[in-house]
Image (cartoon, rainbow, N blue to C red; front, side):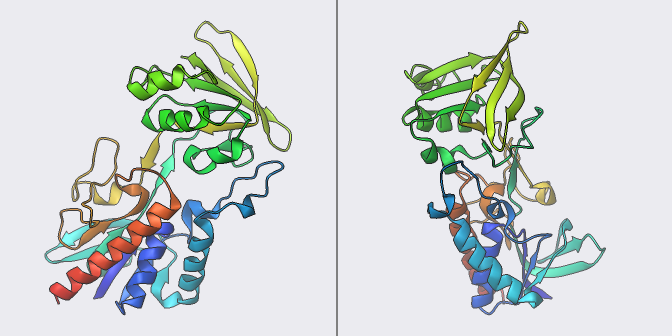
Length: 301
């Protein structure tokens, strides 16, 4: 019987594992990789992003510690999670079934990708899926942001204050009628292209142009220094569907103590209703979940 199984090896999962190990828990991290999205780093022409303060360096230190403690990890994907009385059963992709007294779900979320030719080619070379992370690097630049939901408009509001020109590509009307939507579209630096669709990303070593198409079929080529895509997130919450409470977007609902409402089951990181998709926030949530699980295990010993 394992004390604690942590599912997911991104910032939240790695942090939870390190904290659990330091609490001398019999802990196992289950993940096909270590580091998650924090392993990727934006490349911006003329800017050395290694000089930018970010959480990836801290994640790397946690990852190195877990890599060294190979007994505390298995590089497999969890395929099933069940509650069996007072314990949990976690099935791995090789068919092995592990039992644990507590579980932390830290499987993260992926951005909805832009389905346009060139978008994948220029991923992290001018095409970014995290405005909140990289907006400060585009002061006095010309950029495009694709999306019309809450995350997109928050990102657009931040960009509108610092860029020279922002093309806001709203594939649908979305939340444009909200206070933040009206503020963004009324900003002097913002040019709204409502109901236009991105059809191609072009460039050389970096993305330089975004081709968009109007509902009537008219095409424009926008010269840009960067492209932000904010079409939403897809949380990896499948393992706890029917077990924990999940909102309409698929995020696991947790208390301020990372509790799911199921005794012994915790969740942390981007798979939960976090206010922002940020490495440092996920790190803090992972630490919080590990400490909460530790207290639960002491109480139920």
